[in-house]
Image (cartoon, rainbow, N blue to C red; front, top):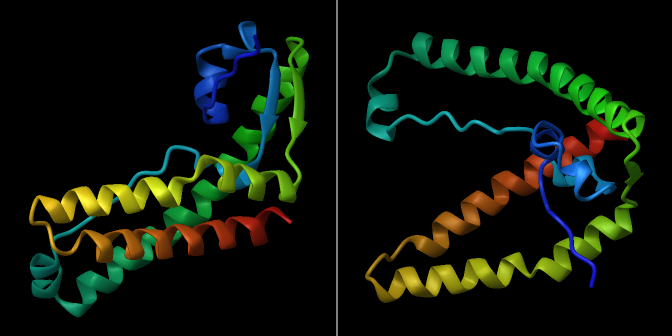
Length: 148
């Protein structure tokens, strides 16, 4: 019986998962590299001056630009290190990533979650999921363009 682990490359690397699962499939399109969501209440945001709002947006853009290069270098270093310790590393082809997304049926899981929330009286769960998916789709498209 074959088994496997699904981890971000950095988590698998830190946990030395390659000692137990030496065949590693990798795709930057499936890797988020420790995303941190910074959020602010909409009412609080609306009370900020335009200058403060602009400063926050500039800081976010600067962080994304500088951290992207750090994350790319970290990703490549970890792959090299995995190969150096004997792991077999293969980068997934775009069609394999698409197949992974289809096979996981994550959209079905999201739809189920929305129905569960609506049954509890949460009326905007579907809207929230659509907004999250739009953000994720945009992020993945940017990553795809960046990684080409």
